[in-house]
Image (cartoon, rainbow, N blue to C red):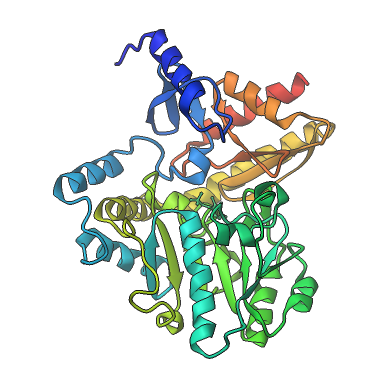
Length: 404
Ligand SMILES: *Cc1c(COP(=O)(O)O)cnc(C)c1O
């Protein structure tokens, strides 16, 4: 193994402190390698990765099939631009359409790009039909859709939006309130945009019946129903798409995060009826659909199926929910609730608990988790996680809460 000098890490941390743009709050270590759900820093300290780089590392770290697919593709062809077809991308588009039930896919490189494409698709769709004033979007309080100006405009949280305005053309209403959506619908509303389970907002599943109600409202008003499954998609909640839990079909869906297993890729999926909305020249991406990212995503989808990872998310999700529910009951003084779906779950700490410090202590004990919605300790592990790994994480959290 690589016996890094402790000064390597120290020197690199100095570089970070001196030169990295300080828009994050990274802890003081440098991760250098991983295997499955384990990560190691430059000084050889081991961490249990139960966040998967924010629901991204679907297959964990160093998965042999993903590693091999990326290496082989890198040796064959990395980039040709969207002027030309490439083989992994066409294999990927087939797999994605088969698994999702959608007809058309536009590829990009991130979640926010997939959302931008979706918003442009909705606007252009109505523009082409002569409804030129129809560009408004109804979105939800506490939603998160990304950081570029279009996806920021639909994001319903002040902490992401403040200082970046004007962000216009969007009406935010309470998540779960179908009546409020109905009241927000005007002839100018092109689309309703929703996360089936709000991720960054606090891992809040849509209440039962809400997604079907949105489908009906959209249909009644001739608007589109757009799904943001950037965090919830790719099997994480126990279905390939979280919308499937309610048997609802959106008109378009944005994917990213877990799709590439760590290699940047985003995708906008839509029905055939929307295939004409973005004609050649109207939208694009230089890197979108490149062979390397496509080969990675194709492998993620293949392993998802061959290793039964979606069913695994159901089974282990049930176990995790049981354990977190018990933990919430036992520590009711510090924990408000536990909730989530499949392998996207959260323990919501009460307001008197310093959630950031809980996360930091967990990290010091070797468990990596992330926050969601301010007070939520979020579990979004690789889908290849074992029950014992989840138990290790919950046990650490349990011990920590006991000491509060
Ligand atoms: C992370 C996320 C995004 C943005 O994805 P990026 O790849 O960070 O641009 C959008 N929507 C949801 C629901 C997300 O969780």
